[in-house]
Length: 305
Image 1 (cartoon, helix red, strand yellow):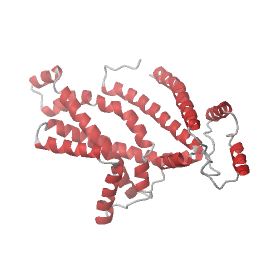
Image 2: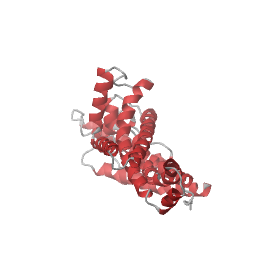
Image 3: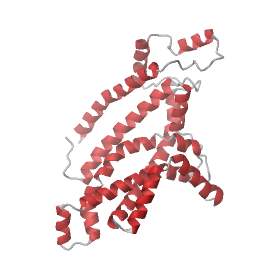
Image 4: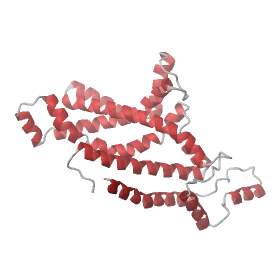
């Protein structure tokens, strides 16, 4: 397993290089520059600022300087937040997004698996139709609608949880639920269809003919094979959740990375955009590696080659 992990990490290097390269050139192909929005900036000062950030140099020279910084672990300075580097911004915001994302992921997995199992056991009944209706509604409802509804009901009307900010555990509940319900609904639908498909396999019929209870068949034989599709989506889902959601972070005034990423796009803060994109790629690589390792635990037939 150690050799497999090392090979995957080595293969991650060219993948991250391709992501960094594509992001760099896409940013520089966009018409205009990061300081063109400052219309009141005198031309002399604008030229000095561009020289400070090496924007006056040829594109290949800027690219080489960018790669040199990446090798040294330096993502560059932020154009918008003066005196702060991209490393500083990500270092301050990523832990917040990770905490929120992991809580949302836990909610998604817990409620998604439970709802999917109950729905599959009661397939084609009224409960199944009701649960799948709410699952479809959860997937279709935008985050800003769900977040606003939760704030109105659980904060303003019944005053159970605080409406915003990031100052302790009570402040985490509403944004975590808002961010986790849509993935939970998707996992519920996926779990239901996977269990129903697995339930038709020959080895399940054999286990049932031996007189095993439905609970034993579900947990010993069906569930271990049925969760494989759910595990497959956990890699990109984890990376998406832990890098933050701009809408959720904006609604609840959370100082996470998603909020800074959107403002970076608006402000054309190229280093911050490239830095957040690279962090997202790193998280996808790590999450997919962990998913592959977890596969061997739930399915003995899978071997890491």
